[in-house]
Length: 281
Ligand code: AMP
Figure (cartoon, rainbow, N blue to C red):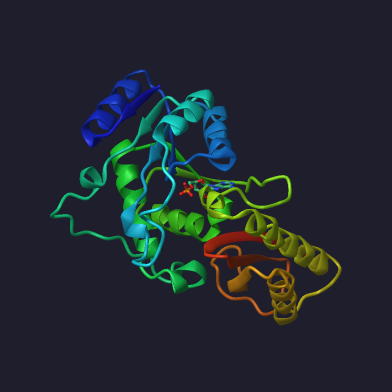
């Protein structure tokens, strides 16, 4: 497995692989890898071709009061895990490599990026779309893999790719969870022992909401009320948003027909966690 810090080195490696006609599959990450990330890499490998992952804690997707400085980082550990997962190369650029001092461009995705996390993290999805478009242009992958845990992010990237006619297949992958249902996240290391136990309330509440919908509940207001109660029954959990939206365009839904997405963002102590699940009639 090879590791590059510069755009030039990454491009040269990709060009060499292309000479053999090899497909390139990209998995963008912010590192501190866990089973969620590794499942994306395994799927990218199973689909054929060389897997390139990027590890870059992108400052432009963090707000001024967010956890950029303390975001966990461990490149040696990540390299070992990636090598085990069959990754061919890691692109781990510095901030200066990605954003030289005269950098002036940003990518704005309208509408899709304004609700849910976008409402509470101004500029976040512009930062995401900008860095992902850069990664797409640097690596020029045939396919790129994203987790459904960041459902809104996946939709934003799908829109970006379609709107700008990028010849890249976007693959959405299922959420990988801990044994008690907590969605895996690099941020889970911030949770204290008490917070970690209480954090399982997010997925439990989503699962109960899914059962309610299967049993006939259609009214979003009463579902959201229930889910809020179940989550906030945990003394350290405070909801930032609990919303039901269209799975395709993320527009708010009032009555569930066929399917909808239940998306939640919850502070457990000081740590902000997100999770979601599809409500199926
Ligand atoms: P991150 O390093 O948090 O930016 O995540 C990198 C990629 O891994 C994104 O596409 C995430 O959606 C995906 N991912 C993170 N956690 C999980 C998880 N628990 N299950 C599936 N995919 C995940």
